[in-house]
Image 1 (cartoon, rainbow, N blue to C red):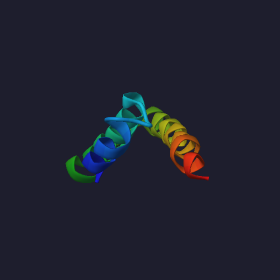
Image 2: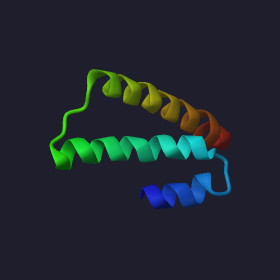
Image 3: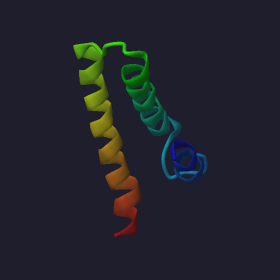
Image 4: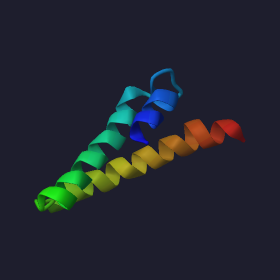
Length: 68
């Protein structure tokens, strides 16, 4: 799903590679926490929340807003 997201929305726009990286980084952190059993620090969690907010706001403005 992430690969399809990148192919259709990042590779040729409308989203930047930086926004695509936010999704990839969130997935990496989730995989580490879920499958390696490693803890996520408070600072990492707060950073992920801030990046998720940026990601959602960007999707809303550039993808959903563009279809209205």
